[in-house]
Image 1 (cartoon, rainbow, N blue to C red):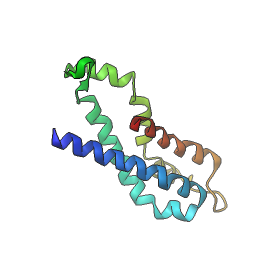
Image 2: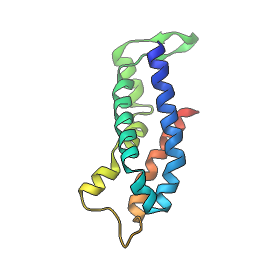
Image 3: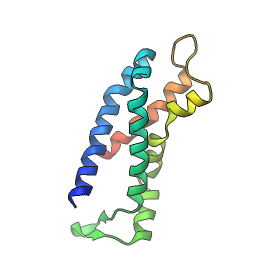
Image 4: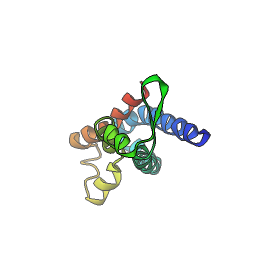
Length: 126
């Protein structure tokens, strides 16, 4: 449907935005603060995408669309679910709420590693 195609384009653009802004925000804490609201919005859109993927048919053999809900859910759970889930967790919000924001003005190594999980979503583009 046109709505689903538009949604896929939006998510793809947000993935590309993440690929551009993530290294910048990891390298410079000031940029991380600047991108905070945008990253939070992207995280919530990615969460919605996880839910949508549980309810969206998939293209099977011979380009036939499979709408069997149980098959679609199982396929998603054994496919991109873990990647999608990890990349949709609002890590900045969780870390900020826990008081783990920065140490001496620099991003901690653990925070960097956890945030890089978002880049796994790039695998879906290919």
